Image (tube, rainbow, N blue to C red; front, side):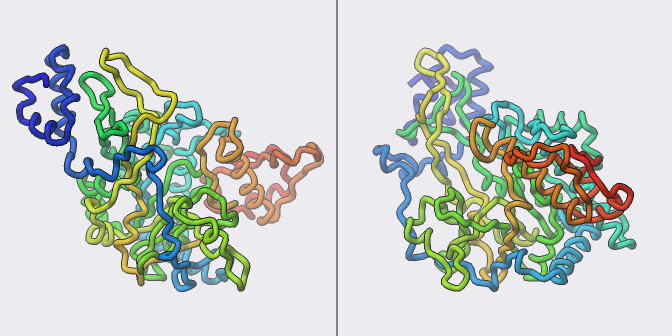
Length: 492
């Protein structure tokens, strides 16, 4: 093994975990490169990362899951409430509770924005991707303007509110941090105050080959990847985010992913529902109607709530139906939209106890000749923690599930337009359909004479600025002045 006095403090640890290969370029690296490598190695938590179960020798067994069917319990009505089955009066009560919390400055939105648009053909953060809306607004801008609108609604509903302010915490990755901050600066924070937006970076961990060897990205830099959306909890604890929330007297935190074009940021109805249930932990779901849909389900396992991946459930169990209404028995589809009280995050979440999950990936690396190799098939693993694994820390009596309508609240952006679903086109069309629905519900008449009646694939182009309406409210005043709308419709 190559040696250098610089590496003496770490050499025994590398030997202990059979990682001496990381030193093989020390003799030809520059002093600065070796210093960078040494700092990189010091940051590795060897004890938590090197577990035998992560590294399998048989490819067929890798990442396989044994069915846990016998342990699954469906959600009870006391925990799981459907927005479609909730009265108008109750919905208004929940909404007012949430708006009051916003008016009092007790609500924060926490955005998971570490992903790049790689599958979209872009190296930029996904929140900056141009979905080709008529307004050319990005996901970041849509979400920022929804926050602006909510603050206005809270002030309007509670006139004595001094200064409704929703703090927006944005977790980026090493790859997206700088470009995200620059994007917000360039757009003057989309009308929000600079002080209410807090950027922070999640931690990254090494990538491995299938034998448990850490891969090198450069001769002086190990290959790393973000530690999953469940790495959120370590980041908010170690980077002062929880302390900041305490200082701002925040009580309610909604966490969500950047890629959902329909997401209701800091949703007052969801927050109010969780408050009404005295919940410390909650989840938004959509109904899973197809047993074969590749989405995790929320259910009860060993008296605790859990997201179970579709691959862990047998076909027989996934197809079971409720004999009363015919819906799937396990139908609470997880959409990564969660509610937590700050007290829960502070006092109950133990991020060091969260398990790593294994994913086979194509990971670039350097070979023995320092040539960079970009594989065309999976050559190693990345370890990730999942955000929903903290559900097990929640008191089962203080857990709530709020089922929303998929067509109104969930249309993720994941793939390019060569795919069939979760593309820029499907996301854009979902927004058009929802905004069209808002207008018609408010009493608007859409002039469709100029449209191609045979074009059933593309909906009417209809985009309404979030600064005008959050989820369809207050449109009657606009419609009063202009009863008939001719597509394409773009209200800004």
